[in-house]
Length: 269
Image 1 (tube, helix red, strand yellow):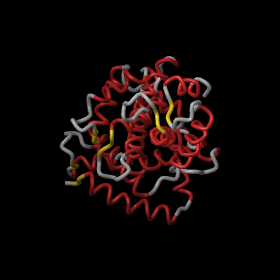
Image 2 (cartoon, rainbow, N blue to C red):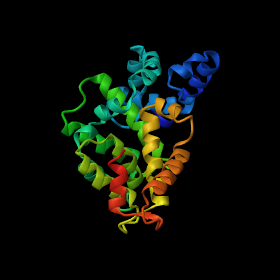
Image 3 (cartoon, rainbow, N blue to C red):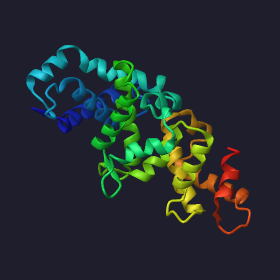
């Protein structure tokens, strides 16, 4: 049998060689590392080929998948698709978050979190599967494949220490940029997410933390954004933005933003 980790290890070796032998391959794959492309590809292989859902591929399952030429088409398909179709609007459409006000979306996602407010990849995927199904499911097989790729990327953005879990509040902060709803919905929800400790005010550290999550998602879903910002990291951009916000809108200069001060800034953005 072939396990998911074995498939990833094998594909990583293949992609390392492909990147070395054909330098244009990495650019076509959106600049992702061999390790990341191997993980994405292996998970897609298991979606297509693990017919009995036991988490491993038998020789028969592997042969059926391989003999259809999927070994090449999966890799080439991902390599071709990543740079050409990914955008903020497309990620909103694929995840269906554009159909939900922030709080409603986060209530659905919160159900998948454990008692400590963390989600592992399986619960993260199940939560989004429920959201997508509630909105009528994916339009076609291509959208399903793209959704898997997008969800992998979003999860990995917030699994910063690579321990297989993400903090719900951090994830919600970042994903808020993908949600629909009215401006008032977004204002109230944004303030509650910025106000990390729930004391009714937003500190500079809280704003920096929140904006870092938002910029991570924007950089991932709208690759040109990072270039427009001069190539700075999400963390550096968050810090500079938060500093400017406090300079302009902390009217009484008490080192924190009230809801009214925050609203003044947010409604001008």
